[in-house]
Amino acid sequence: MSLFPVQSRKLNLPAAALSAAQERDFELQGYGFEAAPEQLRRPRIVRVGLVQNKIPLPTDTAVAVQVAALHRRIEEIVEVAAICGVNIVCFQEAWTMPFAFCTREKLPWTEFAESAEDGPTTKFCQELAKKYNMVVVSPILERDEIHGGTLWNAAVVISNSGAVLGKSRKNHIPRVGDFNESTYYMEGNTGHPVFQTQFGTIAVNICYGRHHPLNWLMFSMNGAEIIFNPSATIGKLSESLWPIEARNAAIANHCFTCPINRVGTEYYKNAFTSGDGGKAHHDLGHFYGSSYVAAPDGSRTPGLSRTRDGLLVVEMDLNLCRQVSDKWNFKMTGRYEMYADKLTEAVQPYFIPSIIKE
Ligand SMILES: NC(=O)NCCC(=O)O
Image 1: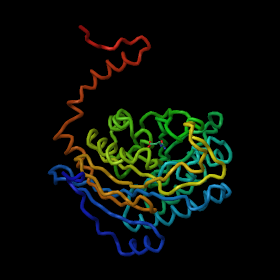
Image 2: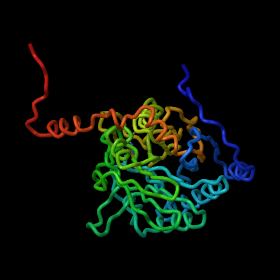
Image 3: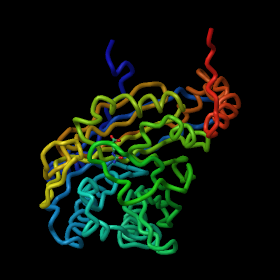
Image 4: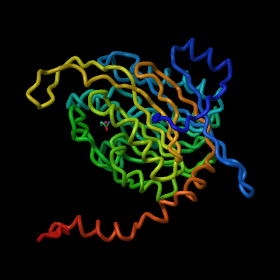
């Protein structure tokens, strides 16, 4: 049986958008998911845009120059998203910088950190949001000056009015391979915020949270209809998991999920080791793109390219979330009170596992 049993339909995107994407050298794909007509609710159609991209400049270019080049690249992609009628756009994890946490060096990488509330990247995104009447989800390395200049991996959510709605910090920090992120920031303390936008309720489950079903669940418990998953991950580590985890989360939580991964290989002047006895090396590996959207009925779009910058435009009728929920009703059969009680016991230091022995 095909892995794409209920395929999304192909969207007809404007010719101007297709030619601009070609000129600007990025892939542009469009797909749509439908829901059944209802008597009491009108369809709730929303278009999301997922952006995946390489870093345009070498990692040893001056910090401000790298950030400016990324702003320019995103600006030209978002302009095309606007032509395609995108209502909510989401960028990849830590989109204003190379994914340099593999190096374990502090400078210059910590210099990429910015205020979520009024840093230059947030201001840039506010302009985009107002200009295109678009909600912008902007995952950055955050510096929180109010709390001692601490660093966080956070996604800033900006309303289509241009107002900063809030931020969602990464809850699960990887300790795997060269993903040495715990050297830079701690587990997020913002919980599972869901943002009510004009186009639907959205949440952001940043990268490694993808492997944690309870993280998806809690965003869903708070009412998320669309959960973005901005990521940075490499082929040899996670490509076998990529098509499954976010898709399964869409099914399990009766919502749409939108995993996004960067593309390309990023090189660093100073070699670093992986602490596994292997040779020192200069790159983390190949970021394989393959961004896609999964729907609550288990269908999904094809993925974007493994190597090229891209914009995935996906139209969805959010009524599908409740329709699938009414059919499968996992929120009714979930037995959450049983798990809540047992988990509360299981996390205690002197927990005794319930094993029946002869
Ligand atoms: N950025 C990040 O959390 N990457 C970890 C690797 C993965 O989750 O596949």
